[in-house]
Length: 188
Length: 188
DNA sequence: TCATATATTTACTGGTCAGTATATCTAAAC
DNA sequence: GTTTAGATATACTGACCAGTAAATATATGA
Image 1 (cartoon, each protein chain N blue to C red):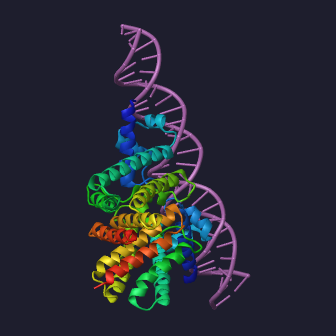
Image 2 (cartoon, rainbow over the protein chains, first blue to last red):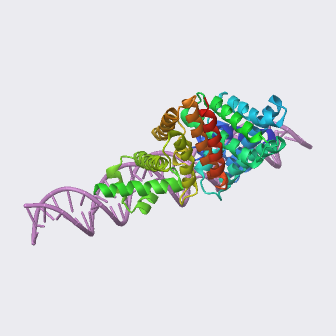
Image 3 (cartoon, rainbow over the protein chains, first blue to last red):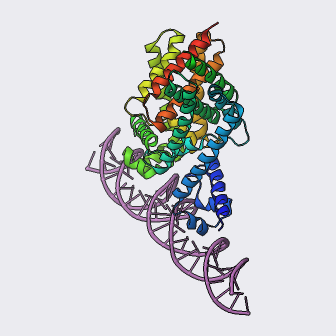
């Protein structure tokens, strides 16, 4: 199997796992939906868990790339970029295929903090937090760590609410809250 | 079986499901951990799903009762109570048995919005939102619906971050953010 | 003490799960 | 055309799942 076909397998698996859940998706369904035979899947991944980890790695990479690229395209100064985070969120939530956060769902299904899937999910959030912290520092916030944490908190809550209660108004409310928090955190 | 013994079954099941997850917990484990035989469980609940729904109902009732009671004990004016929400959150997160939000985890495992378990979880969030909205209206917020949504957002994000990244500082950051949002929303 | 009803134990059903064995197929290389 | 290597379909393994059947134990009530 070519490298690109392996990528197709991981991408399709990622889509199905995101849509239908991890434990609820059996290997037979993955065979059906990816078009890759079971033997071939197991040539590339020792276990289902390994395939899930590969799918999460792909999701992390693509999500953060798209997210950061959009933020840096939409705004230039660190302060503007902190706010542009919530335009990127708006685009995600109200875009085509929003179905909640794959990593929150993964951590929910694999609750043990030592579990590789839980740890991979936590690392995704840590990476987002590090990006926010970088922006908050460059924006010269009074307490960059706090501001970064508050904005990530807002983002996670926004995601959960859109997932559980629907999208109406959530993105707008979140952005307005972010604006207040950012403005207040940059007054010296 | 007495009514109280049935309550014990539901309470123990709730604890196990909260700790170990829904799909990852089999009926045999519930028999082992509740001390109630399988036949007796199935006398009271037609299916595992029905038992899960009963456990969620109990959790909703207890969580909201404890939460609201604490808020109303700690503060008297609506504005103070909006802020006291985040003292209750602090107590929950840094109390003994915090393991994330049972309803976010339930909605994550049963993603279909039409699924009874997903719907029950969404109703819990709706009930919290309704309480926040009531407080925001009584506090004469400029846009009560928005403030209520923003505070619930903050609360959900706080829960997710404490679950995935650990408790350090999260409650304090959330409360400080809430104070800023509330103050800003009440200026006329 | 006996009768009745309920709880429990044990064992089972049919189905699904992750992962594997085997045998067939395809396609390129010489 | 034959060989070789990898992909495939099919069928299987043993374990576990939710839910049930039947036999045994226990407690209640007259």
